[in-house]
Amino acid sequence: GQQFYSCSDDGLIRSWSVAASTTSADDSSPNHGPLQTWRIQGSFKSIDHHWFDPIFATASDESVNIWSPERTAPVQTHSDLWGSDDTVNVVRYNPAERSLLAHCSLDRGIGLHDTRAGTALQKTVLKMRSNCLEWNPMEPMNFVVGNEDYNSYTFDMRKLDRPTKIYKGHQGAVMCVGWSPTGREFATGSYDKTIRIFQHKQGTARDIYHTKRMQRVFTIHFTSDHKYLISGSDDTNLRLWKAQASAQIGQRTTREESALQYRQTLVKKFEHLPEVKRISKSRKIPKLIKKQTAIAQIQKESAERKQSNRVKHSKPGTVEFKSERQTTVIRKVE
Image (cartoon, rainbow, N blue to C red; front, side, top):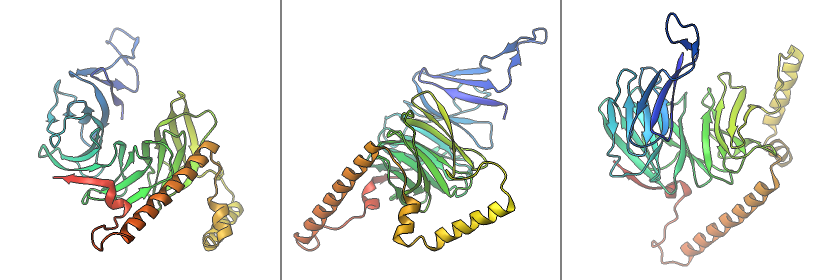
C-alpha cells in the first residue's frame, strides 16, 4: 500500500511512492520523482493492479499486457484479441479469481482473459462501445459496464450472450461506474453532467446528483464506509457527496435513530401508493435533462408502436418480438 502506478498516452508507465524517499544515505532531500519507468511503442489507455499478487495489467492501442515490477518487458501479452486490432480502453482484474481479467475495446467488445493459461476466453460484442467496466466486489461473477448508448449493463461472466439488467436514465454516454463496498448499488457518471446511483436490482436510479457548475463526469468512487461518493469532472474539480442525500452527518441519538427507522418503515409499507411513490421518487433535475428525457420517452413509445404494428400486419412467424436485452448483444465470440 505504499506504491501506486500510472500510465499515459506517451507510452510510459511509472511507479510512485506515497511517501517521498531520499536519494541516498548522505542526501536528506526528499525525492518526489518516479521509482521505476517502463516504455512501449504506443500509448496506454488503462492500468489496473492485481488484488493480491505484485503484478499489474495495462491496456494499450496494441494489446493487453501483464507486467511485473521486476521485469522491464511484459511477462505476458494478449495481442490476438479475437482477430480485432482496435484499441483496448479499459482493463480490470477480478477481485476473487486471481487469473481472470476483463477488458473493453473500441470495437464494442467485452472480453475475458485467463492469465494463468495465457489465453483469451470469450468475447461479446454490443451495439455500441463501452467506456468503463467494474466487477461487483461481493458477487465477483458479475460486472457492470457503462455504454455509449446512455445505458449501463450488468453481465454474468458465465453467460455473456445477454445482460442480466439494463440501467436507464442518463441522457449522455456513461463514462465511469463505481461499486459500493456492499455490492448492492453502484454510481455512474455521465457526459450529461449528472451522477446517478442505481440499486443493482432496479433499472432506474434511486438518486440523481448535479450542480450548476459541474461539467462532464469522468471518474467516481465510493468510500470504504459506503457513506460518501468522490467524483471528478471536466471542470478540474473533485467533489464529495453523501451516498444518502438526506442522511445526517455525525452521531445520532437513540431517539433520532428510532424516529428515522420508523419513517423509513412507513415509506416502505406504503410505497405502492401513487402519492407516496411520487413523493419518494421525485428528484429535481436540470431542465435540459428533463426535456431530453421526455423526447426519449416519445421516441421509445413510437418504436414500440411501430414494432407491434409490424408484428400485427406481417405473416405469422415471419417477425418475432425481441426484448431489449436480446438486441443489446450483437454476437458472442468464443
